Image (cartoon, rainbow, N blue to C red; front, side, top):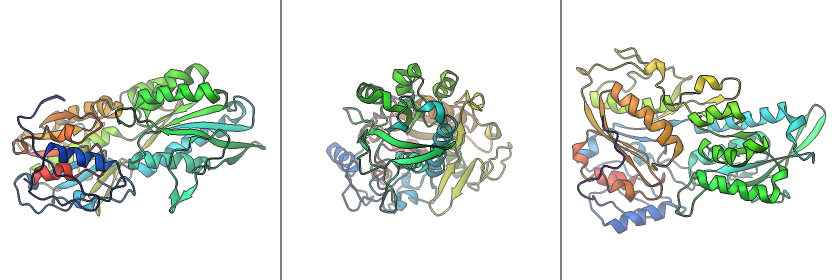
Length: 443
């Protein structure tokens, strides 16, 4: 199986620029500059959508799975149904963002309730927390920010949901996007305040950036460190950066998301908790739906219905499926000091679906798969190693492409000859940009 992030395509395929209103996946080509324009437009309040495939090209009929980043409007969260129904072998695989977000918020709240007598470091009656936001335009990041604010009571409603806008610095409680909450514990009333929150984007534009989070916690602590009682992060990469830079030494509870191996191990050293988004189930589903489509069997084979090798998942416990959006969602689990030893190896295949498929009925097929950012801690250190274990079990020859986390063209330029692949698994830089990929498959 190919484990190569850097393999270069022989030629560069053109991609169509996104318009701010509608993107049609036609057959026409474009220049590299048009691809960059599409990348740039994805960072705006875009309303672009992808039309369902109608090109009839051979590549446009092949199995396609979007994973980790669901095709959607990054401003409103509205799903791009054109991309999700691109052909009759197209699916999305991710995790239940809202269920996981609520679980993280509840985990933080439970910790505060259990440790209220010691958690207020400066004794001012205010339990202050800081929040590292991954990507303000990413549905998962939005959900996690909302989940924490809902659980702690600091959320402010906007357009029918909790506002997920970064508060930036809010040590005086005057920010309009959050509010102070009160919490009564053992007869004593505490004020809960989001002291600061910030999108962790580096100077090159990459989001979910751990180094930026490590630098930011240094800035925050230099200004109001004695007020910080809890550190919360949208993911473990940023959470661990802040933990190692400051909160570990100062014994400040820190919570992340993803259950990366280093974060789970750090629970023994004071990292307070994380959320497993069942990456083992996600990675399995990412390749399993492709395998089933390639084999021409029922899509539920080896998922909700046992296959010949005995692989099967439990719907409602391991995952849920939404038929309308053709989306599989892994369900989340809280990881704390009480159970972290069960999660120490994040790259181990999930036992109920770790059985080898018969090559006579599931012969070798070639898959093109990209990771939007080769430097993303969760995807590179957890998700891809799981994929690499599952691709062998499913007899799939996968070519892995690592992006720069900034532009779609850095990835699409390496899909120079889609005809040599039997199926595609796509992880976009921006959720708006499905057309950057389908326009290539349409040609």
